[in-house]
Amino acid sequence: PDDLSVVGFDDTYASYLTPPLTSVEQPVLAIGRAATRLAMEALRGDDGAGRLRTERLATRLVVRGSTGPAPAVDGAEGR
Image (tube, rainbow, N blue to C red; front, side, top):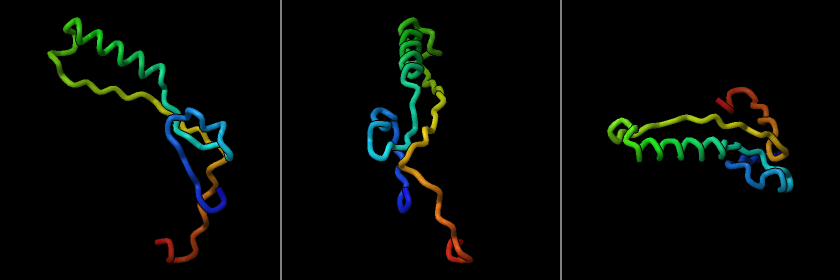
């Protein structure tokens, strides 16, 4: 974390690593429910004539020990 920050996605085993991995947590239960609901609508013909539907589900950043603050930038070097 002092020299390089690492972030994972899925949060599956992130807290068991050393250092614990900062990770984006997916709402897996909500994903499963939405997939089941959309599949059932398609089977019943309630899916709007087969149109592609998109749903956005919230994710959450779980900050742990694998990330640190960004280094300070001097003058014009970082511009």
